Amino acid sequence: MSSQLPNIDDQLVTPANPAREDVVGMDHARCAALHNYLIDYCLAADGRLNEAGQNSQANYFDTFGDAVEAVRQRLHPSVADFLTAARTPDAPLFYFVEGMPGPDWGDFNGLFADETADLEDEPEDSIVRLYYSHADACGGKSGGGMLYHQRRHLACFFVHPDDTECAFPVDKHPQCWYPLETILSHWITLIRLGKVVASPNNEEPALYGSMKIGNWEWRPYGDGQVAGCVAAWDRLCDAIEVRRRQSSGATVDDDSDDNRPSEPLVTSVVLDAAKIANPSFAHAFLSLARRPRHIRQIAPGLSLPPTDAAAFAAAQPFTQMPRQVRHWHGTEPEGIVPPVYLFFSRAGAPQVDVSRCRSSFRGHWDDGQGVAFPSRVPPGVYSEYVDRSEPEATEEAFRMPLPFSLHGARLSSGREVRDMAADELFQHGFKPLGGDPNRPQRLERLLGHWADLVERGVWAVGPHGVEGSIEVFKDATVNWADYTIPSSW
Image 1 (cartoon, helix red, strand yellow):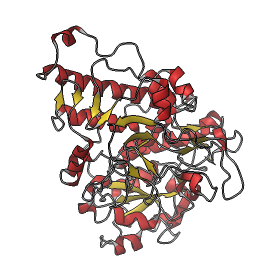
Image 2: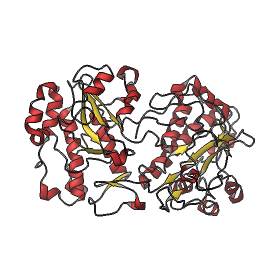
Image 3: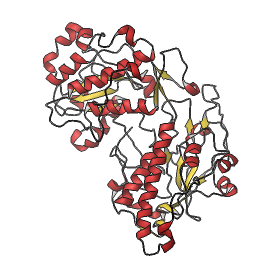
Image 4: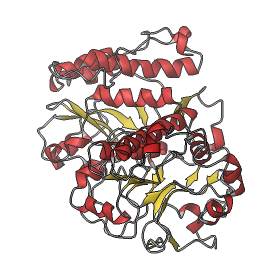
């Protein structure tokens, strides 16, 4: 399919090709190229790209005619140029996006988000809705979409109108606003990574019985995400090893040793004996990531998983939980993947009460099914509970329950971690690039962020790895910026 599509690599926002700062208004040509690429991708998935012909579809002004011409003067010239070049999709533009709203569809559905601007004390006509959200991909919520600020020329995606409190006032939430081309580039990155997959509209069923949005399907994980997480793990181990060898307790023999031999973190034999789902993200990551020879502790108070099969299996609180549970609507999906305990706290660390606070681990097990659920678990890093049939299933994600309150720590969105939430540290919160605010953070981002903390000297490293107990994470209540992962998908 890719051979039929236009090459937009030079338009994608990347660290080497960032959004331009020398443009007055929106970088409309770049944004239109990325927007139209998504339309072409859908056409190619349906086998209609050559039939339709690139650039043959009507643009926004063609589609809405006199109604949009009547409000052209209310649009910034660069936004009008974008809408002149942007073709109108005849199917969902992306997993989160139903389409482009008409100029006269009302305050919470139309092109001009005047009511939102008024509620948020923004200038009249300053907020436009370039895309409206797809309710099925947004938890059944309607009225959301991509809001674009015509004064600041930044965009933010909202699942629901109520979410605007997460990004307004703009000056207090700068981390939630991006150039439009940055958000569109993130969406295309998801496609290239295999996280979002396109197939013929309404013909091919989605994998695991999950929901399709037009051509689009959100996959629980893909090989690219496993590879990215393994690369982040290697970076963390390398950062620790460099500083470990410089510590006073490192032995002379260490200097000639290869820190990453061929042994995996956990062998497939041990994983299978512990009943870790296979295939799954956790199984793939643990069996492909290399086990460092000299590093014992990879974060304050957190160590590598044991290699002994009996010890690894005995430490898992969730792997014996049922993989099929009847939903409220009567179905019994087979795609439940229980959390896996990945990185362990020290023996004797206070356990985390997951019975009285919001816990992602409960999932459908806590839906009146009478399943005996652990009330307390060891602190540490776990893979996410996943029902593969649900929207935005995210196997590559993690939760990190801790045995203390972190009032004052913040999510990527800038919101404070809730007092009684045991597992919100390092999580997203509101997602300005699109998606459910409850979708958890990727393990790859956590490992990469930990590497940053090691490289910047925030965490001390000794002869056996990162030093300190799990209590070090309480520093997030004061130095919260060190414990906040910048927003991404």
